[in-house]
Amino acid sequence: MHTQPVIVNIGPHHPSTHGVFRMRLTMDGENILDVEPVIGYLHRGSEKLAEERHYTQVITLTDRMDYVASMTNNQAYVLSCEQLTGITAPDRGQYLRVIAAELQRIVSHLVATGFFLQDLGAFATPLMYAMRERERVLDLFEMLCGARITVSYMRIGGVFQDAPAEFWPALGKIVDELPAFIDELEGLISKNEIVLSRTQGVSVISGRDAVNASITGPVLRASGVSWDLRKAAPYDVYDRVSFNVPLGDQGDNYDRYIIRIREIRESVKIIEQCVKQIEPGPVRATSAMLFRPPVGESYVPIEAPKGELGFYLVSDGSIAPYRMHVRAPSLINLTLLKQMLVGWKLSDAIVSFGSIDVNMGEVDR
Amino acid sequence: MTAAVSGADLAEAVSNYAYDSVMDSDRDAAWVKPELILDICRFLRNDPSQAYDLLSSVTAVDYVEFFDVVYHLTSISRNASTVLKVRLYGREALSLSSVTSVWAGADLQEREVYDLLGVSFDGHPNLKRMLTWEGFQGHPLRRDYLEPPLPYTWPHGG
Image 1 (tube, rainbow over the protein chains, first blue to last red):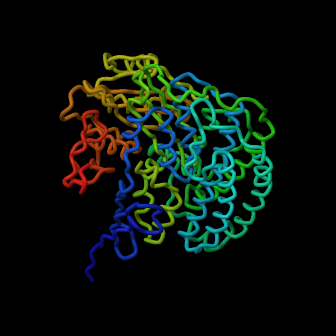
Image 2: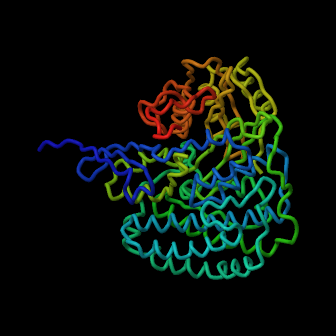
Image 3: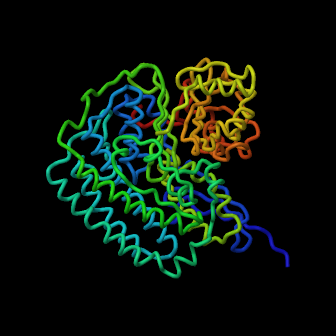
């Protein structure tokens, strides 16, 4: 019998592509022969826009890149600006940044896990569980800065304002209750026969391939490579807290899922330590709106929820960056997509893509 | 803490490998000859004393008289990072060897540089526009890029 491959476009508007992403699949029946990712549907030219705004204004642009992890985008940007200008944030400001960033990591991993399970066919229930907890963390962000998604909480030299008094008991309550929630979610999922059979051994990435393809974050650690910038290049106060870096051994979809669950537990530990260590004091080194950094350049990579996020800033001594480049983990983690999907079936493509956890706002910028 | 290898140290290591291959160096970065980039990258990745196995970032900057292509390199085993640069003069027909054969991670990043800044990479497996659409004119991150006028006007001017 004579057959011929069929080209199937998944997306750009499809619930499983987490935004406007298009996969151009060459299929032989259910089997994937070739994959071509097509991106750019959400390109807003953030890097060009940054050239026409002063340094403080650019913070609002960073919110809109990875919009489920705005706090860490803010953090990467302000750290890079601080290296450029030589400003150091006061201790309380750094602790608040770390607390906010770890809360954001919990949110991002919850969203990743929820949608990953949704892609597996566990329709709505686990996603709603994850979203319920996410809402509670977003309420905390609202207390910190008045916004829930596009936070713009951090500033060059600290944070926008100190946390209000009602923030601390609310934070304590969430931190106390999160481990039980993770147990609940894991009880539903982690030993589920369908989840195991669909994810274990699927779309394996070896550690060597992952490093060579510049893959970072939970996807790299799921392949067994111990590389976490919070440990390797501690920024803010990460050198004063202790936590583990969970590692996978297979590099399959299941490892990528379980690493995120374990990282949420570690984030809770980090927040608890920060709450114990934080002391009263100023939260911001300078209230200046306009800066004229010296001529030069800076790049401070941080461990964002999705991987290494860094802003490469070039200053010509004016109030606006001469050039800003975003090292976007979501984009670069897609490098191995073809290798991950070829040879698997269409239904695995959706799951494997979900396991990378990309955010199209960051891919396209 | 990740050790930031200075441009001078990187320049010394590279010139020990290939004589007269470094153009310049400063506190942050070393500039190498464009025609040797692939060879030098292969050395920086494979040599045990360098072992830059993770290509953090590839980008380019338009300085009007010239372009700098910037490579941020990280070594996971040595916990070190450095910055390698290549300077390309002129504004037309800029090209450089692709480093995708050394680091697969350069694939999408070089495409982005090609798309937004117009530096083409020889030997890249799939060099085409990525963020803008096919048929887009110009390279928007260049300093002299001007948005083409709209083919229509709003009813009350503007």
